[in-house]
Image (spheres, rainbow, N blue to C red):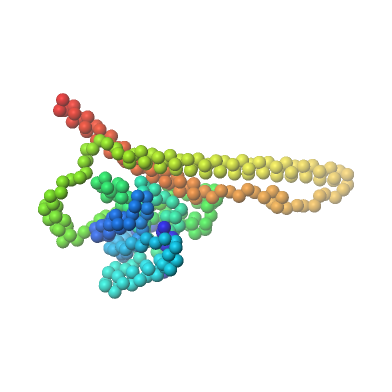
Amino acid sequence: MATRKEPAASASSPLDSPVKQIQIDGLVVLKIIKHYQEEGQGSEVVQGVLLGLVVEDRLEITNCFPFPQHTEEDVEFDEVQYQMEMMRSLRHVNIDHLHVGWYQSTFYGSFVSRALLDSQFSYQHAIEESVVLIYDPIKTAQGSLCLKAYRLTPKLMEICKEKDFTPEGLKKACVGFEHMFEEVPIVIKNSHLINVLMWDLQEKSTVADKHELLNLSSSNHLEKSLQLLMDRVDDANQDIVKYNTYCRNLSKQTQQKQQYLQRRQQENTQRQSRGEPALPEEDISKMFKPPQAPPRMDTLLIAGQINNYCQNIKEFTSQNLGKLFMAEGLQGHNS
């Protein structure tokens, strides 16, 4: 996974995002797709490094290279050394070698996780313009390229720096699942020579279009998305149960503390009426240790993933409904 070490660069925390738009060369998109086709199998995730440069508020991604697949048994493999050697080799052949982020494939949109959050924080903390590209091969196989770019919001960056994931910390920072990631618009750009070549190849191509745009079958995409959504809802329900248990224990302990203080005050009043000295002061915090609050960051990530599933299902169903209404109109016209 992308537990990538922090590249050497100065860290800063701008109030506004320094990247407003991302421009990607078509060759980079093809490399990402080829990487998944060669090494990705089903739900297995492939990852790699993005290279390019920053021009004003636009991030231009001009090259990339993949992370090689290796197991935990390959103790001799050094990811940082591998990255440095690759960038050094690219610099020797006069290719853009500046580190500007990383990319990752996803399985039915399942990318909102703690691993991605930690990796992107590591990148963005070291290089403030860093982005993560999420490539969905399943949607792409249906005929439309699905490639999105995300960054952590400034609020979430501050929370991750302080590592305060308690309910009070997140509430104070006003961070919800909708304020965790910000999507950056992507523009794919090719040179004029490549555009001419693609036009020429399209004219000469004899391959029929394999994508049936009016196909009314939903295959298993909707079923799988709903199943993943149900699993995430179950996870969210378990986290809610844990948080409710914490709230009950905290309320019960607070009530016990108040009862203890009242009894102690009554006893001191009686001792004072008898002319006896008051009881010595005791540290209440040691007697009643508050229960540990469950971390809420995982709950936010689950909520963010549920929202992502819902958006994917909404897009998929809206397209299918449009096809159904179109087919109904065509059928009525023919009859």
